Length: 257
Image (spheres, rainbow, N blue to C red):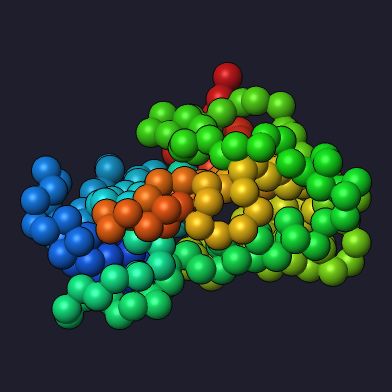
């Protein structure tokens, strides 16, 4: 079926191969002594229901530092959240003899564009965008079936200058484009329809690499969270990323009551 080919093809889209390859790096850095199996092929496809053109079914692709979830109804994807990506190490800084090369950086744009944005803010904007001096240890509601329902915080896109707006547009597109083109297009169309000016950008923690940092971007149709506070196995600080895209109205096509 077309749906099977289309959504199974996400496994070859970036940044999936690099996330999977990092399992080899982790295995070397941990000396093969982790309580978890470090295997770049230990990722699972799970189908819920029977894939048909006129029914409702689901697909999950999951493994260490990866969780993709789709619900399809009548041949159309009606939900693609939660979408979780992570990287440890985020930047390979140690030789691993056959693993990813030193300097390999995973989820680079997701991190760097946000640094560019926070650096571009003036003092007044930064006072609104920065919600805490210290970054949280983890994204909110990690592992929970539905996203947090806290009141949105941070700087409105409507209060940004054109250059800053283009940076945050690029950042949101970076997340959206990690999925198949039609899913990404629908995500971006929903954002445009709700009004890009209504989105908020919030930051916590350090505003430079190597020290714990966190941000979130949220609007009526989506929530992005990113955190980098943990060291990698070699001890390099703030070199372990977790990031997620969620639907504030309900993940897995299950409306929040």
